[in-house]
Structures are given as structure tokens and as C-alpha cells.
Image (cartoon, rainbow, N blue to C red; front, side, top):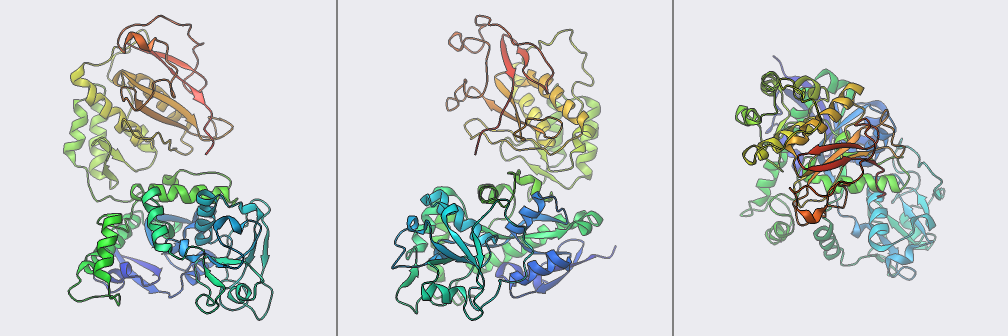
Length: 546
């Protein structure tokens, strides 16, 4: 079969060069690399005219449009541009001595909605307590009069003090130099920096500040991602994984070449020293692709967009990206591991193996080395049906499995919930709910049934139900399920779970019975079920405020 044509537009970064010159070819794709010097031009052409099959795209514009209901594009977890932005805050040092002095000032920004500005406002608010609502934002070009590109970004959802630079002769840099604004921030540095004695960076030693920021937070700000036209993706579903693989291979090749310092490939005289310093801070790969590798950064960006009124809800990261192949494939051996679990029916196991051979999205589960998958939601219905071959007991009390079967049962439950888009946690890690968006009603009920019946394999694990919507409406949201090993000394047993036993009597000893709440449906209110001598409550509770 002839490869599928893919017109891909991006600036010619070092990580894109092997793909651009044809050294790397995504499997099944014939990539026509379109080099556009300024990313803003790519964004405007892609969003306004859908001119390319895939392209580099502003992270903030893509996320806000997606949350607002525009599904014209689907993102790949490839991050074409990422930049620490502490060094891009330039101030009139006669007026601004420290970050808190920005309160109540006039600040120039190329676009209020641009990703660089979102990151800078977020760090000013979270790291230094700056009151963003007190600031007047002046939009315009950093160099030259007029607006920055031809953006079609969505407007903020609440009133923000934003004005335009209407001076036909002055740029934001000119306004800063003349004292008409107090600072600038964004994707570029004003030309007056280094020329005017009263203009300086807010953080003169910005490299040290940025390194400390990364060491404390684990955040390396993402500016641009790669997005694919939705219609192209629907027509060629393999293209997302293929392009991801090609871009990742291109990046890895560029990274390896950068390590060769016998003859410097870049005009950076102290590159070897810089590489040693980068390895010390970031490890081997300072520019990873993929969702999990960048979760902290992506979650921070989504939170900042929400806090700055650029979208009306915080979305789970998985909602934003197409499922793509990972670098560690799962084979039949891992599938067969599940056959050791007594709670997996033989018929469903056969279905699972058939799907596993045909699917592209199988990955290692980094937490528990069991099967997981990033595929369509229907897989839960097609692959699993709890207890299909097991005779149903006449009551709801199932005994916990033997010690030999315990770990296998836990692995099966984790694999099951991962297939349904739900995240499980290793003991000692931080609880973090993730959502499965709008599943069919029968899948919701199946999830509740499995969660309850598979509690035999959880034994001392708790099961909790959260709701993504603040209205706690099961018909419009998907319950988030977290499980946590209560045996972990780092995790207090009373923190999230209401238990109907006396902790002092020991985990396996029946404590004094307490009054049970009324029994009700798994998706509506408390559900009491028993695990041997212990009783747990599966509760619906409100999500916590960020």
C-alpha cells in the first residue's frame, strides 16, 4: 500500500531536522515538511484555514478551543517548543524592584491568551503572590505598531482589563522605554533591553531562578504541541501513532547528535559544559514526549488556563491527546498473566487476547507491570464482563482470596480499571483522580458492578467514587475511581474512606459493629459491601477545590 500523504508544518527546530530532511520516515506516512519561520503564522493558518494535515500549534489555543467544544483538531503528546519564561519579564527597574511591585501596574503583552503569557502569569501568581486582577494588560507587537499576528483565540470568560496599543508609531518596547507601561512579558524580549539603563529583567540571574523552579516543581513549561486535523485523523487513525513515532525518532536522533562534542554542531562555545549541567538537572532526556512524562507540566498549564478565565473547567489530560503507540509494547506473555487470576472468565480472556493482537495502544503499566491500554471506551464492554463464568452467591459477602492469589487479583483489577480509562495508584503515591468522559449508561453500571464484585481481590484496598462535575450529576459526568492500599504507613486509613470497624482491633479482626447506612445503588449514594470481616463504604463525595 502506498504511504499516506501528510502535510506537516513546523518551525525548523533541531529536533525536527531529521524528519524534515528525510532521515526519519514515520511508518506508513509520506511527510511533506513545511518549514514556516514564525510559529504565529502556522497557528493562524492552521486554525483559520486548516491549511495543513498536522502542525505545530499553540498549547493554550488548542486546549481552550477543545474545552469550548471545538473538536477540529486532536493533539499528539509532542511538544515542539518549551521555554522557561522567568527571563522574559522585562521591567522599568525604577518602578519595579520585585515581583510584588507588579500589582496595579500596566504591563505590555503580545497577546493575553498566548501560552507564554499564561505561564508567566501563573508563576507570578503561584510563586510570588501577584494579584493578576489588579493589572492592566496592553496588547500589541513587541517590535512595531499593531497587533501580534492574526489570532483567533477565544476571549476570556470574565472581564479582564485589556487594552490595545493604538499608537500608530510605537511598539510595546517603545512604550516600556518611554515609561507609558511598566513592564512587558511574553514570547519575546523588547529591543530596549540592554540599550536603556532603566530597563532590566525582573530576574537578572534568571537561569539560576529557572533551575531552582524546575527542581522544586518538576515543571518545564510547554509552549507548542503538535495537532492533527480531526477529519484527517478520523480518515487515517494510524497516522497519530505513526507521526508521533517519527517525531520522537527525529528528536532522539537530534539529541544524540548534540551529545557529540568532538566537533560542535551548534555555535555554542561552552556546549559540553552546558550539556553536563543539563544532565545533572534533567537526566538524560530534557525534552521528553508523551503524556505521563509531562503530566506535572500539562496539569499546571490546564490549571492556569482555568484560573485565568480562559476556559470554564479543568479537564483531564488524557482528554486532550490522541492515543499513540508507546515505546514498550505488551505481548501475549503479559496478556497470559491475567489468566492466572481466578476472576477473569475464560471467554473474556480469549476476547482480550484477540484484541491485544490487533491493537496498537498496548503499553506497560509503569506502576504495577500489568496490562493497560489507551484505547476507545468500548473496550471495557467488549473485553470484560465481571464474573461471567462464576456462579453468583446468594449474598453480597465474598471472601478475600488467598495470599497466593492476592497480588494476581490486584493486578487484574488494576488492568480492568485502566482499560476503562481510570487511574490506579501505587501505595505511597499521591491520590490523583482522572476521568473517563461521558461513557454510555450501561458502561457506567458495568463499572459500578465490577468495582463492587472485584472487591474480593482488593481485600484491604479501598474504592472511592468522585464526580468530575460540581453538580455531582452521574448522567452528565463520569465517576472517578481511586484505590489505595491502606496498609501503607504513609496513608492514614481515615483520610478518604469511611470504615465500619474498629482500627485498633486489627485489620482482620471483626470489630464492633456499627450502624450501617441505607443500602442504595452503586452510582447513587453510599453502597455498603463486606470483605470478609471488614466493611467499607463506597461513597459519593464532592471534589476538592484546587
